[in-house]
Image (cartoon, rainbow, N blue to C red; front, side, top):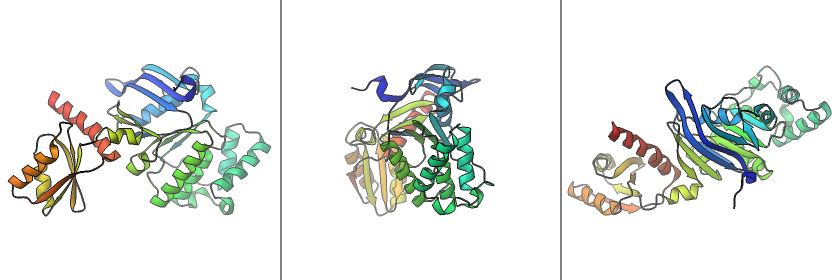
Length: 317
């Protein structure tokens, strides 16, 4: 059974208001130690605001936060030495070399010089900078800058690492390499909270949470969350996919219809019998097509969690 000692982060009723705007709305969050925990949500959903409160960089309006056994924001200063933070924007010095950047960050963290030199040698090797130590950071590619930023964020061997959309500006190969590094850190005991827009990245996480307009709308393992949509996702093949899409969007109980190549992926409400109804609707309109169940993915989970709230707000209005 999970206990508080097993968790790196516990937040209860976490709320942040900016004037009349509720940016984060009574969020309960639990992040187990040594896990890669994904944070998903549309732009403006409150992900960055939540991360900043968990780091102690922003005081909550209300709610309780405990990070690595410390009360936040009261013990934020003690927390800062135990965490790392990396954003999507490259934040190191472009006119310094790779090694000079790492030396500077080690000095900021008050790492003794002898230990800092050994630690820098370690991360230079681990993040593949052996032949680039003298290269200016500003002359590197996006993927190289990203690796350097990660190396800098872990130079002091933090217990907890916050990553705010760290791979938004790099190519797929660099993203894959970056995630391999994250799992190496998690295997060594580091807890990682990472926000992302990429569903393929979210599927890699041990557990994910989805925020929408400041509220937590889903929380669980990828398998748990996709399993909750069993029977609600359908694959439609049709000779006229655009016509079929327009027709399906008019049907009751259909949440979304996305075209993928020559097929349509349909997400429905949890009311049963959707496949037969949609097949009949297509046939009645003279559209030839097949309708079959398909396993849900995290994009379906994301749409179900966020689109459903949009529909509820529209009906309330």
